[in-house]
Image (cartoon, helix red, strand yellow):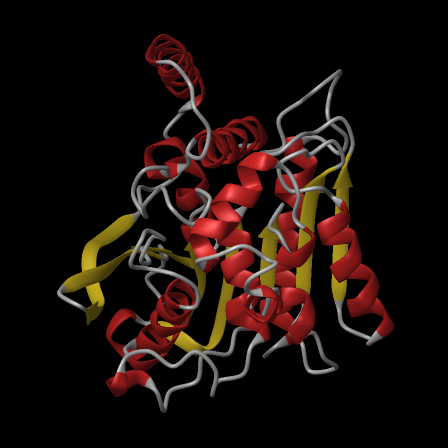
Length: 323
C-alpha cells in the first residue's frame, strides 16, 4: 500500500508541475510509458474500486457548465461520510478535474476504503476574459453545492475538507480562509456556507505580491489581469496571507525547500503568521525537493511515503476532532 501511495502522489505532483511548463512530446511519451509500467507492477488490486459519479454540474456561468466528479466512500453503512475536495493545479490556466485521476486512482480507492468521499472539481481557467476572483467564486460555489446536495450523496455536510497543489493550493487556501459573504457566485448558492474543516496546500503561493520569476510573474499577471505595479490592491486581495485570523480552520502546508517556481518562503511566511495568531497549522519542509516535490539532488526528506502518511493522519485527525 505504501509503495502505491508513494508513487501515485509523486505522479500527481509531477503532472501538476508540467501542466504549466513546456516539455517535448518524446519526453512526455517516455514518462507516460514509465508511469504505466509502474502502475501495472504495483497495482495488486487490494482495494475495492471506487464508485465514481462523473460530470455532475454544480453551476453554469456565462454558458459554461462547471462539473465535478464524486468518488464515493466504500461502505455498507448508511452513516454520512466526510468529503475531501481536490483542486487541481496548472498556473490557474491549465488542467482539469480528470487529467490526473488515472495516475492516483489507487490513492482515491484507499481513501474511499477508509470511509472518505473524494471529489475532484473543475473551475474556470484564467484567460483574457476570466480573471481573479472568478476561479475563487467557482471553488467556493463547489463547496456550497456539495453542502446543499450532501444528503443526495451520503456526505456529512459538517465534514468537508479541501486540498490542492500549486495554483490549486492557492485557491484552496483562499476558499478556506475567506468569509462566507465573500466571493459570492451562483445566486442559488449564496446563502449556503462555504466553510471547510481544514485546508491542505501543496506548494501553493500565499502572497502574490511577493511572487517573483519571469514565468510566475507572467502567469500571475494572466490570473490577476495586470501587473502588481498597476493592480497592487487586487494582488493583496488575491493573497491568502491577508485572510488569516484566529478563526482560521486547521492548515497543513507541504513545500519543497528548493522550489524555484513557488519559493518555500511563501509557505513559511503564512505558517509564521498563522502561528502568531494561534491557528492550528502544520508545515512540512521537504528537503531536496523542488516544485512538485520532485527530487533535485539526492532523496527527498521526508519521503513521499512519509508525506502520504502525514496527509492521511492529518485528515483523519481533523475530521475526528470535529465530531
